Each structure stands twice: as C-alpha cells, then as structure tokens.
Amino acid sequence: MEYGKIISVTGLGGLFELISSKNDGAIVKSLEDGTTRFVSSRVHQFSHLESIEIYTVSDNVNLVEIFQAMDKAGETLPDAKDTKQLRAYFEKVFPTMDFERVYSSDMKKMVKWFGVLKSKGVALQLTELPAEEAPATEAAAEPAAEAEAPAKKTRKKKTTEE
Image 1 (cartoon, rainbow, N blue to C red):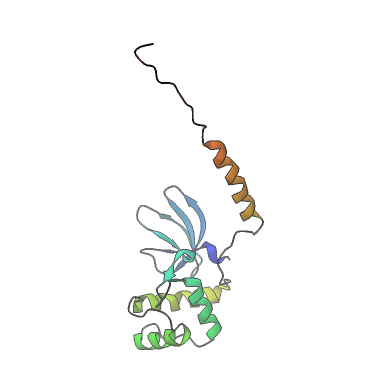
Image 2: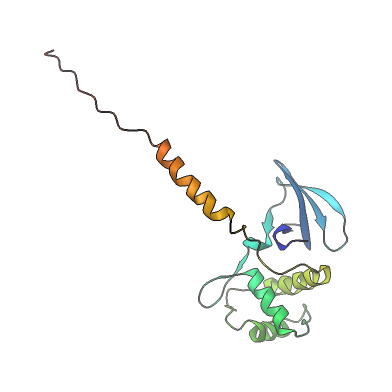
C-alpha cells in the first residue's frame, strides 16, 4: 500500500485507501476494518495525507516528516486522551512544531493515524515522479508553448482618403 493513496474523509473517522475516483465521489477502503464503500464528494471532502502540512516555528512541514520523526524516535505512543502526554511526546519527537497553532485534536489524529499506518506496513515517504519523466515533460512543454503563440500580424490602417 502506498502512502500517496491514503486519504482522510471529513465526517468519517480513520484513514482510507483511495481505490478509484469518480466525478461525484470516490471508492475508498477503510484501513481499520477493510470495508470498501462509495463516498460522495457532495457530502464529504477528501484530504490526501501527502497534501497535509503541519505548522512549525519556521516553515510548514509535510505530515510525512512528522511521521518519519515519530518512527525514528521509536518511543511508545502516548495515550491520545491525555493532552499533557501528547504535548510532551511531540516536544521530544518534533520540538520545532508550533504548539500554539497545532491543536491537541490534531496531535491525537497524528498519533492515531501513525499507529494505523505502522500496523498496515505503509512506507512513510512521499510519492515522487520518476526522474526520467520530469525533465522530458518540461523540455517538451517549452517548444509547444512557442508554437501556440501566434505570430503578430501587422496591418495597414485604411484611411478615408484612399
């Protein structure tokens, strides 16, 4: 299972694997119980874990960096119900996190999600485009942009005297 296919759905607890997307929603599979269902985009919003960023005292960091720091620390996860334990845990694991803007509910989600991802054996890394495709795409786009721009035509203005 790839980290890039993991999403969070508003109104539904837990994490889901994106199986397929449609115009009016998506087919998702729960990571907790394995059930597959259709989720309407009219009722719910989807957030890819890859697109979630966390506030720090300097620049925002991607959620995967927090997960990697949690994995590297190797400490036991705190009780999600105890906010003091949560804060102490994240102060050890990721001390540059901005604790004034990252709420305890966010820290609870991170601990819960990290536990689910580890239990499912999800590799905690961002999905990257293959290195071969990126430069080729950029190089192909440049000539196309030049071809799309029409050449300027110069016209003589007609005067009423002619």
